[in-house]
Each structure stands twice: as C-alpha cells, then as structure tokens.
Length: 394
Image (cartoon, rainbow, N blue to C red):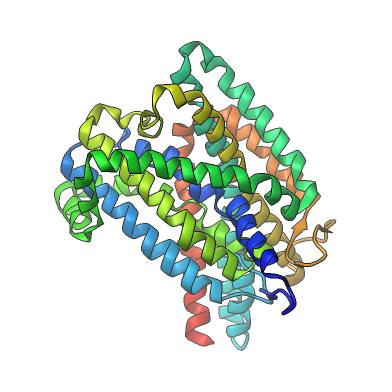
C-alpha cells in the first residue's frame, strides 16, 4: 500500500491498527459463532468424541496458521498493485507477468473474473449468514422470540448498508470499540473453559488432525467443509489492504485477533469434551446464563461488523476492476483525504442488498453454510492460482 507519510504521528498508525480490528477482522472474528456447530451438524453424522473434537480443533488451528498467517498475512499481502489488494489487484499483476502470451493472458483474466464473481457472492452471503447466526441466539433466550429472527436480521442489514456512504474511517471509528470488546469477551469465555479442561490443548499437535482423517475417511473431507468456515474473511483481509495498509492489518491479526480466536475455538472444544450434547450451539453454551442477553446483543453487533469486511473489499475490488477495464464506469466516492484506497461505490452498495433475498430465501444460517463454503473456497483457489502465476513469472 502507499505508506503514510514519514511525518505521520505514531497515534495515527495506532488508529489504523484499531480501524483494521473494527473493519477487516469482523468476518474472521465471528466465525466461532457457527464453525464447530456446522462441523458437528447432524447432517455430517460426525460423533462428538474426544478423538473427533481434538482432530477438528487441530485442523482449525493449522488451517488458520497455514492459510491466514502464512498464505495471506505473509505472502498474499506482498502482492499488492499500487497499494491495492484483492483478487483484481492480483489479476493485474498476473496479467502483466504473462503479457507476452495472449493465451495465458486470456486464461488469467478468466480465472480472475471467476474469482471476483465468487467474492461478490461472498459479499452477499457473508452478511446474511453472519447476522442470522447471531440473531438466532434469540431462540436460547426464549423460543417465543424465534419469530423475530428474520425481521430483526433484515432491519440490521438495512442499517449496515445505509452506513456505507460515510466511508471506512468513520465506520471503523464506530465499529472498532465494539470489535475490541467482542474479541476480549470471546477470549475470556474460551480461556475460562480451557482452564477447566486443559487437555484440549493437545489439539495443537497436527498428529490429531492426521488421525482424524485416517479414522473417518470421506466423512472427514465432508466435515472439512465446516472447518473452512473458520477461514471466512481471510480473502477480505487481503482485499481491504488498500483501506488500512499492510502493517496495521498484520499487527492487529498476530497480536490481538488470532490469539482471541484460538482461545474461543479451544474453549468450545473443551466444552464439547465435557458435554458432547453441547454440539448444538456450542458458542452460546459457553456463555453463563446471566450474560446470555448481553452476549446475543454483542454478537449481533459483531456480525454486522463482520459484514463490513467483505463490503469494503467489494468496493476496493470494483475500484481495481474499473481501472483495468473489467467493470463499467460507475460513480466512485473517495471517502478519505489520506488513504487513497478508501472508496465507496453506491451502485455496488445497492447491488449487495441482494443479501436480503438470501436472508428471506434461506431463513437460517445452517442452510447458508454450504453456499458460503463454495464461495470462500472457490475464491481462495483462484487467488492461490494467480499468486503462483505471479511467483512463477515475476
């Protein structure tokens, strides 16, 4: 990214780190709401045993390390196009790398457009599944509140898209304190349960992940589709690089967000070791009954913010696609005088309101899980392939 001028005050850099927590990591940060619930869904037929819990946790841990820490934070963020990230920026680099071969240029362009289309799909599905998964906590407060899940989700999403015109800086100033509270809360909940069942930390050993595949065969690969949900938001991390810069995003992830996520995932695993029946909604079953209502409210706020990462990424991707000539000219609003990558695209903001159709059509986070996994893995495959092209030819 274009770095901040040398005279920039240290406090400004700190604000970028805080802003990254508020915008970039919402999607990754709210994945604990539904990941383990999806993996141990009755649809997969995976029994909640000591071996399966440790195996799944091992897969989640090493997926986060290999995919998010190494692939995105270390490698992908080195592949920026004039400060911009995301699959379209990577497409520009790959196209330049093979510009002497028209056939390769065409193949690279098709792959990039395919990945971009899936990312737009991610921009529709992420708000739907994130908000629904949080608001569904109303069922735990009282079954009678279940009828309010859909209207509440729709109202929250409409408010979110209405905020977009104010830009990433103002939105992150509103969202960052909430996300900081969210990460502290989920880390505390997970740590409290880990203390009660420290044996869950054995899952840090990759052998348990290997044994999980050896024991379950094809069922393990099906369950892996649920594990992929722990990685949702990694692509947005790269796409939002133009909004905050490499260093603030890397610091926020490694120092604050990653440890909090690990504590919560392992806390849910410790809960499942103690109470296998808790596989239906393990996240909320970590929460003491007295704190359930505040946690549902905080989760709803956090999932609204989770949607922000892919929405901001969609704006950045559209900006890059227009510069390359892959997207028609539409109105583009620059929302910051200091960071050129912070843009708002009214047309895209309106198009992403298709999320309301996803909410009303699927009606629950469980039904959206499969579509979500396809969008996420498809985009990741496209970016990985383009990165290999850039690495090979440049």
